[in-house]
Amino acid sequence: MVCRPRPREDPPVTAPEHAATVFGRLRADGTEQILFSHDARTGLRSVIVVHDTRSGRPWAAYGCTAAPTSTRLDDVARRARAMTLKASAAGLDLGGGWSVVIGDPARDKNKELLRAHGRFIATLGGRFVPVNDIGMTQADLKVIGREAAPVCDSGDPSSMTALGVLEGIRACLRADGADGALAGVRVCVQGVGNVGTALAGLLAAESAESAKLVVADTDAARAADGAKLLGARVVDPDAVVRTDCDVLAPGAMGAVVNDATLPELRCRIIAGGANTVLAAPGHAAASADRGILYAPTSA
Ligand SMILES: NC(=O)C1=CN([C@@H]2O[C@H](COP(=O)(O)OP(=O)(O)OC[C@H]3O[C@@H](n4cnc5c(N)ncnc54)[C@H](O)[C@@H]3O)[C@@H](O)[C@H]2O)C=CC1
Ligand SMILES: CC(C)C(=O)C(=O)O
Image 1 (tube, rainbow, N blue to C red):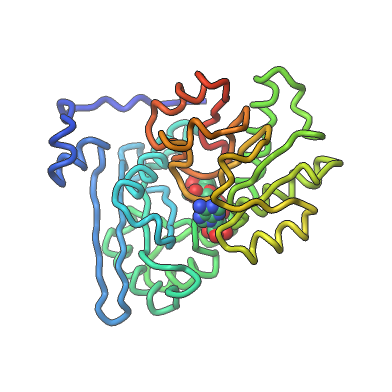
Image 2 (image 1 turned 30 degrees about the vertical axis):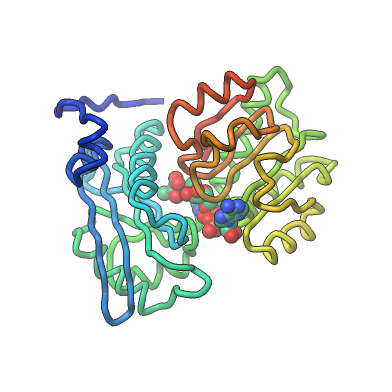
């Protein structure tokens, strides 16, 4: 694995500067560019963050989210930075970025809105290459692709992501002294969307005791369908962090581990596909202090 350290040319940003100014915010994360866009005709509001394009090819690996809880700039910026780190850890000549279309994907997403988003992506001249992520599908990318090129619409990455998470869970079990087998291991999957459903399917197929699988989703119908299909038990999304399990597999939004949830966790491993699971880097050590092994996004 090749991890390229990225020298920081700027002096460190102080906390007040970070909080107080837009450029402080950019410098704190090493972010290159943020594009806020609005389209009056469709009502589109979007944020595109290009974090870092220095890794050779002048374009950004990215995700695209439409979930309302992702609208805060902090969240988008953290996700963009995570993409840079992931690409670097994998030795890819890609930078990192993220984009969010603000709205409820089930209610607000439509072709005209996506095309408007695509036109703003196009203004970046190929520096931002969308991949489907939260609230987005490959079909949505095809629509965006009518306005912007290139887009990654040649195959949904979610099943490969789930496979990576499964192997990550196995590695954590081994690190925890077990043999990496999943039979009898109680896994709680938070969010049964693109990645969570694929992961839960792999877990159910792998373990003879799929009843040990627990799923949760803020979309109750989705949770019920997933549970029925997989023979899993449903828990309330608000109860996920308090669910007694061996592995908590976050597969939805970020900041699952934070000051409030940390004391409540009842798992021994946290390993899932969700990006930016920790609200702050220090939460990894704080988890370890509580005997919980945290694996950075295993995808
Ligand atoms: N799609 C992919 O290939 C990859 C996705 N990821 C990350 O995995 C996570 C999930 O992505 P997707 O599966 O594509 O998104 P998705 O939108 O298909 O699924 C997310 C699911 O989580 C549910 N959800 C939202 N908030 C929740 C909460 N508080 N509690 C429980 N459920 C909740 C939603 O209703 C939805 O069913 C994200 O953090 C994403 O960045 C990471 C690598 C690749
Ligand atoms: C598919 C890629 C870009 C992704 O969403 C991720 O790694 O989070």
